[in-house]
Length: 205
Image 1 (cartoon, helix red, strand yellow):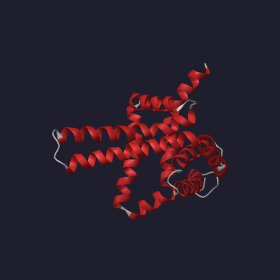
Image 2: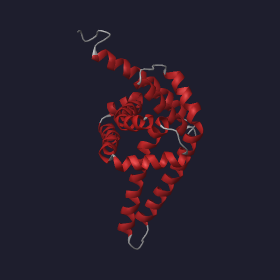
Image 3: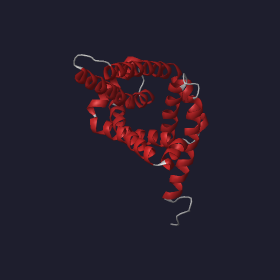
Image 4: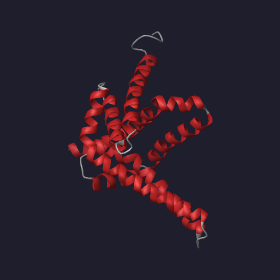
């Protein structure tokens, strides 16, 4: 099989990257108003999941994801933004002011913030795979985060690796801006999908 044959693994990967690039452009544009970033992220996960399942209608699936998860994802985004702001303000105060037990409090604050980020890795995947209200989504995301800690760490490492390489090499930063976010989302959905499939099977029984 030749490298540039349509059915070759190389060409299938290039085709996937082209679709993820389109998805990344849609996500980036829809994040510009800031307040729509949560809905755009939910739509990105939804469209990436559909793509993994073989549905290549990027525009249609992105629009459907925005419509389906607009309310929940916007609330999640606003809550996350407020909580992150509170953490950052608290961390700034702890590192600049003289506070009793400063080192311990700073460590606890940093650990809490990292834990929140880990849980957020599961929130959007859980939302698009299972039905439930916001409380159930966050609870299930919390459970998955610690029940499948190695998988959570792998997902976090994907972002960490991209961040490290983007900081070191401008070309990696450029690739991230082109398709990197959608590629990471796609990889996370593939990774988490094996976990979710077990629970979907149990629900079916």
